[in-house]
Length: 283
Image (cartoon, rainbow, N blue to C red):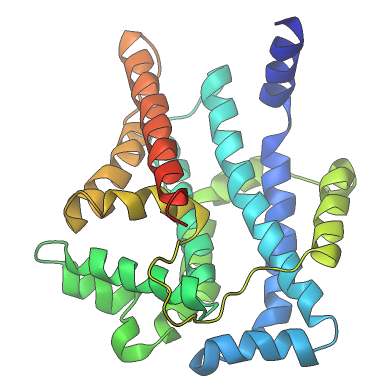
């Protein structure tokens, strides 16, 4: 029990904010290298060409993939540590702005999967488009703005991935970044691990497989994918995912109500993890 407590304390006190920033910087640099050679009109062919022809193309793609995964996971860990230590001493508008960085980070990760143009990316894109169209009144407008895959391919998704979401994410965290800094030499283990993974492991890409009846989306999409089997698209894809975001944005600063909000967030995460596990069983 004492070892477990020390481990949890170590996780709580880790500098997750710096880890998030360093992972983001690596992701941006490697993403710029890939963007110089990426062609959104032939997404899948473009990525395979990058890996085969561009010098160290496979390394840059793997580096971008793993650093992006680390960025999102570290951002969630940073948020969890802040809630655990109750160290969020900011006004409501600043807190809401920071909370909105979470969906920006998630959409950046998600659009990266769609831009692969493989079986997983195509399936994830079609599901996202279906969810958008299920939104009453604004569904078609949002889909035309965000995805429009059936008519425009991944052109709009690519624009959002390299420009739109980066700008929005920067706006949400800019006041925070002005107060805090992160240096790579303070996070050398993370940098080395990311470089090693980018060298020895291949970033996943999955060509279409005829006769395949079930395609699992990105790991963070699995719970939503399973929920869509039981609930309408608007409920499973909009209301349920936005519930924890709304709870975060309106989280009371103290008192019993805050405790109830945190319990709700924990239960939501447990339920989503369970649905993700159910989805994995179908693979």
